[in-house]
Image (cartoon, rainbow, N blue to C red; front, top):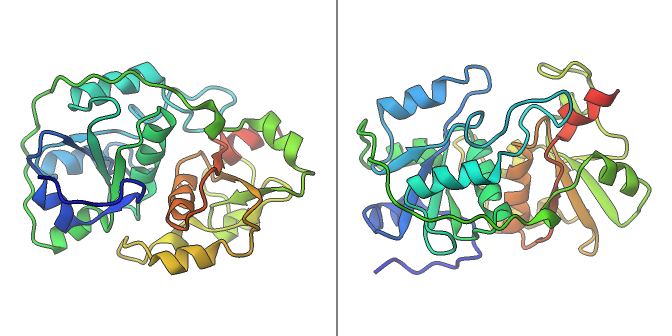
Length: 277
């Protein structure tokens, strides 16, 4: 039997995962990645990972090729990601999928959001990530699991995303709040290490994604997640963005923890927006 937990709750503990490690209805996604060294995540996976985990690469699996516009991490082709999920043993609408990383949930949250975008809500994030798993003394292995035979037919939820035109259209709407998830210095335009232009989308407010977790990648308690969003009226529509639609998903996870559902992602984010400037 699988331990009981609320399916709407997006986090699970290492203690929960160790109990269901061999359960046929659980699949595990290793999402470790480094923006500074795109090959580092796969190398770390090959050196050791949670037993049974399949590797999902931010650039190759969780994004599509970069174009002139659309940002640095455009959303992946749904059918290609579906095939990768099926090979990891995921059955659409049935399998519980656990995602983890070692970057304060940055990449695991992207995976979590993507599966929900594809219509698969049975997805959770490992609180504390790989470091938390190691700290608990749980096993790792370099053994790469053999492909499995899942079945995944994506049902894309277009209402969960907005594009640049949508953002422009709602900028003067007081019922819509645009949230920038980047570090305060990048939001203020004082520092821009990645994109060619610094600054933020006019009207956006800053909720840095790092505030969702502590330094060890453990999420802050639900009351603190709720407190984070108190300044935004419950009736407001929230649109989140970051540099390229990745770390903004950590804010979407925080909103889910706070009970604030319905927020949307601008996948192109600042890297798409500034490509038109």
